[in-house]
Picture 1 (cartoon, rainbow, N blue to C red):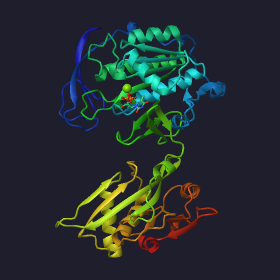
Picture 2 (picture 1 turned 90 degrees about the vertical axis):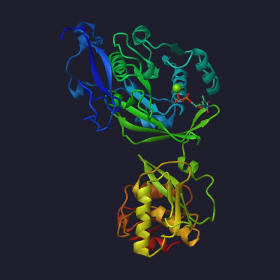
Picture 3 (picture 1 turned 30 degrees about the vertical axis):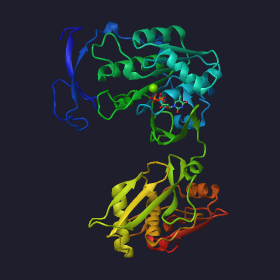
Picture 4 (picture 1 turned 180 degrees about the horizontal axis):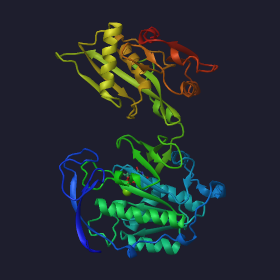
Length: 455
Ligand code: TYD
Ligand code: MG
């Protein structure tokens, strides 16, 4: 094939799989009908962007590499610092993904503000909003000092030129779907544009030791190239999620080359931007009814952080032949399984009852450690007997009704104690690993029946 010739390639919009011909099913991710045709220009090697400092590159031993304090810079947002693994690493590429309107631009503008207060050079590149629109947003957030540089640009060549010239410490690209490279012929937002653009940013970040944040949209229709394609290329992937109707937002780390993943940061969207929620348990439990049946508090681990959540169940007589079962925030099939365990092992007949389970606050939890809480809430509502307000339940429930071990019991019990709970039901098998904690009574149970006896 001649150099510089236009060729067409087919890309999977879901995972970025590349193929010379169209296929119905993607061999990479097994999705159907995801291939789209794109024109790509094969570049000759001379056009490639060269890494600066390439001449100095030579192999080094581990002992020769010095880690300075300065290698991580604090964003002055504890929640974000934790998700990043203790601050932003210099020369790293971070992808912030999430649904439109969730607050990505707001979060990053606030981060930029904090960096400029530290006298760092920050460049915020927006391909979506005009300078005026950014100013309106900035006015809501607070005072900015003069150091933040804003740029409305979508051409990556121009952005690259400015970054090379001004060498800022931190760059924000909002969003990658609007950026394009002139030598790639497909439209902005297509897989090849997004991938090529990220490639350029990656070289800039590593070559010039600049930390770059990239904003990426996720759409369910798959019309815009999903940022999932980029996950392999960047150092850190953060997803910003939450119910658009609820005010809190969760920032979740799903990939991090510099820290642990599955850490979360909790924020609340207010009229003046995002506020950190440093004690999410307290936030989640606010408004919990007292002395109501069908309500219990459980503890779920989000990364290294325990989080207390209220589980609500409502069991009422069914007017139809087939009982209705509905869950919000937890796995539907898991609840069905727990209902079956209660019927078979405890003889509680729920066959003619509608059952609804809700996790208060609109949060979603998949962890099996909340099983015992769900089972107890259902029984409490069924018997119309309130559970002690100062009690929490932790444990996974097996099909024989046994309460199985969960991880990090100590941290969970400690969190319950911190928030004033006096009794904690834990699996019997965790008894050994649990150290004495004063001020909270720990009850060890072997099966669901034992736990129900504490109602
Ligand atoms: P935005 O950051 O524009 O979302 P994204 O970049 O992820 O698309 O935030 C969008 C929402 O946040 C918008 O609906 C308005 C709301 N918002 C506030 O409630 N308070 C604020 O101070 C700001 C700036 C935005
Ligand atoms: Mg935005």
